[in-house]
Length: 308
Ligand code: ASP
Image 1 (cartoon, rainbow, N blue to C red):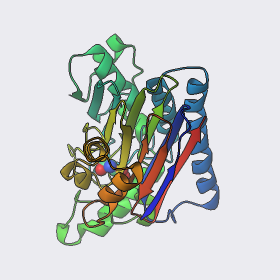
Image 2 (image 1 turned 60 degrees about the horizontal axis):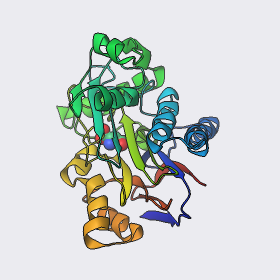
Image 3 (image 1 turned 90 degrees about the vertical axis):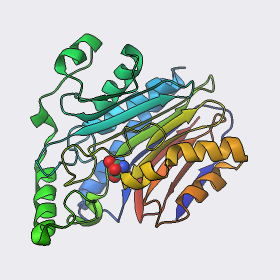
Image 4 (image 1 turned 45 degrees about the horizontal axis):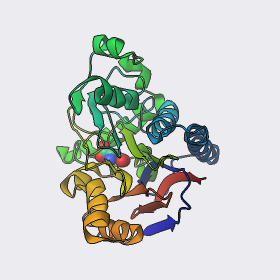
C-alpha cells in the first residue's frame, strides 16, 4: 500500500486523482507526460478558485471538469465503453454541509460532474439516471451527442477486452482486469477541497470499466461509496474496482472512522485499504485544516495536490 499524509496549516487545499491501477504501460512516455500535465492543470484550476476566496465546491467542479475534458482520462470525453460500445457516464458531488447530487448512465451531459451539481442544486433528488437534454437545458448544463465521448483509444481498448473475454464467454462486464493491462485501469477522476471558510467538497466522475455490461452502475455515483464529505471531518473521493467500494461503503467508512473512532487520517485510510482482497483501488482525502492524503493498494494512482 502507498499512503501519504501531508499535514495542513489551516489554509485551503485541493487534491485530485485520475484513477488507480497497474503501472500505466499502455501509455507512451509523451502520453504519461500529458496525463501529468492534465493533473497539474486540474489542480491549478481548483487552486485558482480557492486562492480567489471561492468555495470548495467550485474548486472541485473546476478540477473535475478539467479532467473530464482531457481525453486520456476515463471520464467525460475518452471514457471507458460498455460492451455495446457506448459511454455511460457516472458522477457525483457532495458538500461538507450535506448536500449531494449524482448522475448515472449519463449519455448526454458534456461534463457529467456539472450534471451531478445540477441534480443537487435544481432538484429535490440525489441521483438521476441519464438526465434528458431538455432537463439539461432547463438547468443551464451543456449537452453533448453520445458520439462526443467515444475515442479511438477506448474503442481499441474495448475490442481488446472483448477479444480477451470472448473465449468461454466468462467475465464479460465482470471487471476491468482484462486486456489493456495497467493503462486500462486508469482514468476515473476525482477532487477533494477545503476552502478558506473550512468547508469541504468532494466530487468523482467516470465512465466505469471497459467492457462493463450496459446499465452497470459503479461506486462513483453512489454517495458514501465513491464520494463523501462532512464538514468538520473530511472529504473523500475513491477510484478502483467499484463493486468493492460499494460493498464496503469506502468513502463513508473513512469519514466514519475519523468521526466515531477518532482515528487519524493515516489510520483511517490505512484501515480501509489494508486488505487488498477487500478493496482494489485508492482514494484521496482532505480534512478541514488542509491536511491532505492519498492512498492506493494498486501499483499506481495518478494524483496531484496543492496546499495553501
Ligand atoms: N470506480 C470506477 C467504477 O467502478 C472505476 C475506477 O475508478 O477505475 O466505475
